[in-house]
Structures are given as structure tokens and as C-alpha cells.
Image (cartoon, rainbow, N blue to C red; front, side):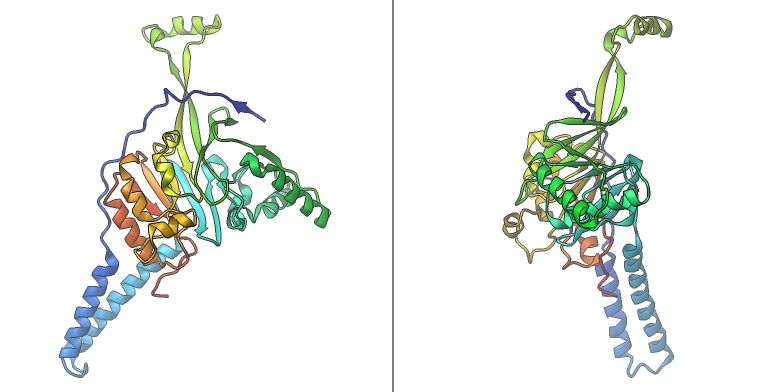
Length: 357
């Protein structure tokens, strides 16, 4: 295990994106147009004339355009954001697995989507089945493809249970399941590679949970040496003088399931200034109260809007929507949040359907 103690006090702050105008609510706009067209067609009497036929065609075209946009959302597999590809599936209560191929990592494993098998690092936020259920399959499939044993990070309180889980599958299947299981606690730091480290932060679910922040590691020349020329700096370096400071820059943060309390926790500051924040927004509408969301350990999108002044991320990726919602509901919620924050807001909608299908 490679546990480090690194100070992030001097970490660089990332510049915010310029304000993003909220996208037009196409759903409402197009429905209004369609209703007005149908009203004119009805007023034309019988719909048999050339004029009414033309208007009917316009109505059908509008419906088809809205359908096309909805299907495009359904088929969109992920996003290219701030130098990272974010993809996966996250449906509240069903499965969550979010993949960042550039970091060779997956956050939670859900039902083990095929793309996750190629990732060397897996970060488990908590032990609910929709987040950890695919773990034995993930380990076994990597072995089947002769991939090196994965490094799997878990909250320390569940490590022994995860070990027993893997042992049970070894026994039942009479197979080797090779895994590097790391119990990583809040505040500890693990070196993934020489330019990347990860550190958990506290989240607030109905069972023990934690999020993760992945940092890039950069070297910055100390101020007292900035006036020196290249040869002088090289001479100092060869003599064994430490001429640089190590700076951790938060790149990607993932919350997993949580109430909104982490927004107000000073220890979560790095998650709220990472380039990309991947966070849950289980409930989106007024039919579900904030109290209900909190009772079940989740976040209502209105709470994210309430705490928007603390958000310093370039991009927010919303996940873990309740399966009650359609693509159009999610799109509308994204638009509302976008009007409150300077960060770009996107939603992981893989697995959700359009109300037009």
C-alpha cells in the first residue's frame, strides 16, 4: 500500500469557466408550437384542405424533431469535459458506475458494465448493491482477460466484509480472484502513479460512505530560486537541494450517494473546486420534498441550487436520478441549475428513456 501524507494547502485554484447561459427549454417551446399548429388545423375545418394538410405536416415535423432530440440524449454515451471523458450509467436504486478512461478508473461498479473491466482502479463509495454488486464480476472478468489484478479502494469499515464476499465467490466458483484491496480512510492519500494521487472525503448517506478526489501532482519551483538561471538551478538540484514544492491540484471529484451536507463541510473544499464534480441529484421535482430526500440519504437538486455559492468547479456532472424521471425532466432540471452556477452543467442520462418513446 502506498499511503502518503501530502499537504494541499498550496494547491492551485482553478479558474472558473465563463458564465454558461442555460439551454433553451426545447421541450416546453416545442409543445407550445405543436398545440398552436393543431389549434389552427382544427379551426380550418375538417383538415381536408391543402392549408390544413400543410399545417399537419408542420405539426408532425415538430413532433419528430423533439423525438430526434430526445433519442440523441438517450444514445449519448458520455462527455468530453476539461480533458477527461466521463461515461457510464447511474440510475438511482438500480446501478451506478461512472468511468474516467484517462485516469484508468471507475467510481462504483454497479452491475459491472463492460467498459469498467478495462479500468485498473475502482473506487467504492459505500456497500449498497447498486454501487458494489458487480465487484466479483469485475474482478473475475479482469482475470478472464489476463489483466493485472485491479486496485479496489473501499471505506475501511467494509474491508473485511468485502474480503469475505470475494472469498465466498472463490469458494463457490473454484476460481482465483486476484484483487489488491485497499482500505483508504478519509484524510489519507494514496499514490496511483507518480503524477496522480487520490484522497477520500466524508459524505453523508444512510450507511457509511465516502467520496473521492483525484489530484494531479505538480512540481513548482520555490520562490527563492526563481531568479536563478537554468545552470544554477541544475547545480542546486544535483547537490541534493530540494528546489521545488509539491502541489496537488484537484482534477475529478465523485460523491456517490450523499445528502447535501458535504457542500457545507470545509473538509470537502477540494471536491468543490476540482475541475469536474460528479455528484448525485436523485430527486428533481417538487413532488418529492427535500425532507424525503434527506430521510433516504440523498440530494434534491434544489439543495444544490441553494448551495451554489460554494461551487468552484468548471463542470458539474449530475448522476443518480430516480428512475421515475424521463430525459425531458432531467434536461429541464439541468437548465434550472445552469441558471444558478457558472460551472457547465451536464447530466449522465445513459439508461433513461424519453417520454416520447
